[in-house]
Image (cartoon, rainbow, N blue to C red; front, side, top):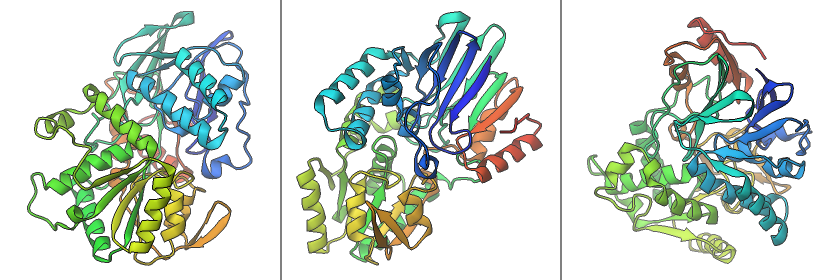
Length: 443
């Protein structure tokens, strides 16, 4: 077998890999959207032949892994889409929203596409081998990155190929961290944070609480850009713990006195799905359910659904000058309702922007992190708001997690190909893995 990379092998976004079984058969692993600088000078159409492709494997439902599926179907793909049971619930919603926001508002086109997706999806339980054509077998394992995420093993004759997808970190309260596979002849490994270590969970919660309390003392608006699925639910879970002071000494009570606003219809839908998929939560989260039946909900949580409510909320916050915490998508500030909050409040020095997820190079989120201005919807905005980054909330494994994933294999991989990382991250991880005796193949 061999692998052809159609994205994320020289950048972070656009994940798409093709496992070639023989001259007549192959499988696609993910088909993601290029974002930020990776999207420049690229066409969204499928640029590779689909001849012999037997199916698509979806590791998880983030757009940089699934965002080109509409183009794939438009190019004639009509084969099974394999994913975990939670991803099977989430994928149609994610792609329906992406189509509505970025492609078309035509309801018939969207409904036809969603029907196609639902017809093609094949849920596959974790830990169960399934047979594919040409003597290929496949198995999913939890990846701990987002609900439903998986890394995937492929066996053909005596060869085993493993694709990590995006791996989660050891400190996620809602999801169980990944367990290393037994072996791999060839490992395709993500490297998003291959050059850094995340701060610990206790430290990140303390930092978040300190930032929020300080910003509330200033009576400003705190904006937290967060992906609708994954980061928002993890953040709500942790905010609930902060508000209840679970197992910690008494803290300031400012957070209980202000509105914490979730302004994302998609996040609200995903919250409901997360709640319905409790069997896939971590043991820690299940234990919390013993004394808190609604760990994603608390008293001062305000949910915003309609667009009119969204606009009214911004006007109210601007006029009242009352402090509030706003959690809104998109996580990289490249679209969605968070953009309207940023336009209104970026120029206010009492505003705080708190980044809890990865900001790809070239995205508005990265510009806000690194520079004093940002272009939003074609207009330049000067940044006077205070900016904070808490890496401990990242859904991605850090360098230690990635090394542990490799070193935890009973039989070390014969070759490792690093993908889904910027050059400094890939180089640092490659150097560390090589120093430990692993064979990292060059780009």
